[in-house]
Image (cartoon, rainbow, N blue to C red; front, side):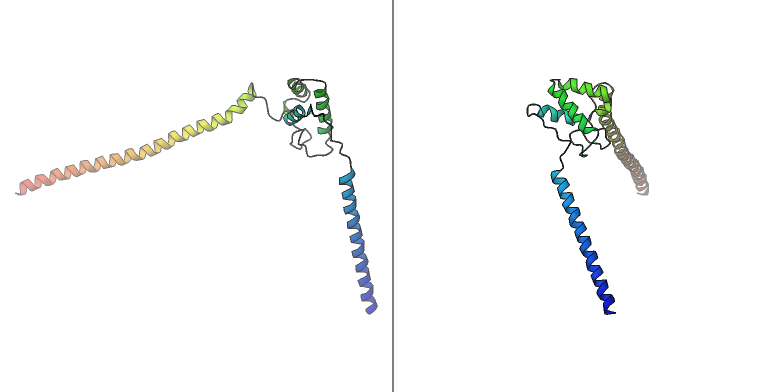
Length: 182
């Protein structure tokens, strides 16, 4: 009996030691990967091109499905953002203007590449319509509320006039009765 409990205790210790060893190995491997794996998405950008690069990389959406801009794509090895960043930087280095670069990528990928649609043509309508709708609905609500509140005051005034007429009628009737009584 003692032998069985001793064997069981030794197996538990061995299992615990094995789990600790696996955990330590996993943590060391993870630390190694985080510290020493080179990032393929990093591009060395010359300081004179950096402001234009930062501005443009915020204007384009990453089409990998992450919903971020090219500048903020969270995927380290994104199949869309990495080549796009390189192509964007190459075009900046060639001396192309901001408008030329934007037009090139819009021509290549369509309007969906832009993080904000341009404020012209039909897109201008899309920018203005929500604000116009809010203003129109607000004005209509104000008009309706004013009608409701005015209607209540008119109704109260009519009731008061009716009461005053009834009161006058009864006063006259009372005076007439009093005159006849004397």
